[in-house]
Amino acid sequence: MEDKLTDFMVEMATNETLKKLYRKNPAKLMEIYELEKEDINLLISKNYELIRKRLGADYEISFNSQVTASRIKP
Amino acid sequence: MKKGSLVIVGTGILTPAHLSQESINRIETADVVHVLVPDPLGLSTITKLNSNIKNLGELYFDPKSNKNGKNRLDGYKLMIESILSDVRLGLKVCAIFYGHPGIFVYPSHECISKAKKEGFDAQMLPAISAEDCLFADLGVDPGDLGCQAYEASQFLFYRHSINTSAMLILWQIGVVGDETLTKFKPSENGMAMLKEKLLEHYPANHLVTLYEASTLPTMEPRIAEINIDKITDIQINAITTLYIPPLANPALNTNFCKRWNVDISQLQ
Image 1 (cartoon, rainbow over the protein chains, first blue to last red):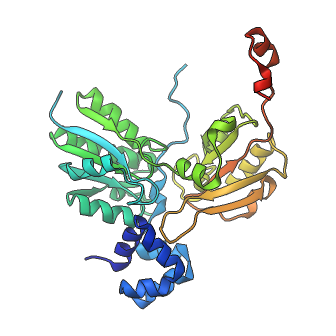
Image 2: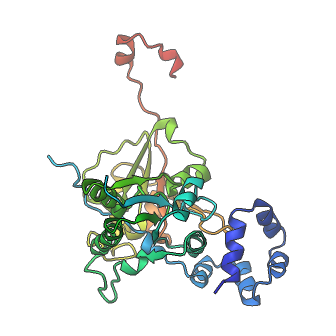
Image 3: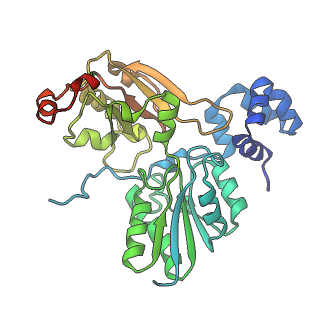
């Protein structure tokens, strides 16, 4: 199922005009995009931890390297 | 060359804005796409480009249940096998990692190396890394005085030579001090160890920056300046990077320059 908030974010990521409109009046733009009231309030709160959680982000899986420095053998 | 191929691409830090045209094409034309991306915008974008997705996140080490092995390295090995098993079936495989797929990504390099050894066509495409975002957001140029970059825990545990005349970037502060690869936050003494190590090279009042690239189009990057002796007092997140600016200009090697008739007036 499509998620309106995710779609809105994806579109804004590549649309500078939309970003400018968001900066000018975020609530109005999100209403035009028919986002849920809860999502509008969440984005306006700028609580990015909760926003990421709402979107389903999991930055723990961004750790993808080792600590060991052992590639060059003596 | 055997049938079956592998291309590894990166989403960049803010998807889809950072996804290259070349990467989009390779995702669209793959038989199967293996994905390890933490951000939902990335996953949503990729799913629209190719519906045959395998989520490598399901193979990631889970410390609560010890699912997928005893540490992160075990999880990486499962991912490598998952990707290569599809290559061995003769499929055109695209594997996608967050950021630049070749920077701080163990499984991607291992996959390329193993696939080539087994006689398959394997290639990695470049992408936008967190370091690229850092240079842009902090307005610093690695070409000015040079640049050193280390994984934060490795920086602690090994005797790396530090050049204080060049910038220093420390990655994965979010898990600093954890040699077990089982934690998802700094170890108990991680930040204290880091402070001690930095104070061997820099004065306590040297101003450093905690940096987090913007991962959503509505947010600004986190740029928090703080003295080195205060780094134990500040919030560290999974994606935090530490930027330490150069302390002083490097000394000019006048003897060398004279010997080779270099006009040092151009260098001062």
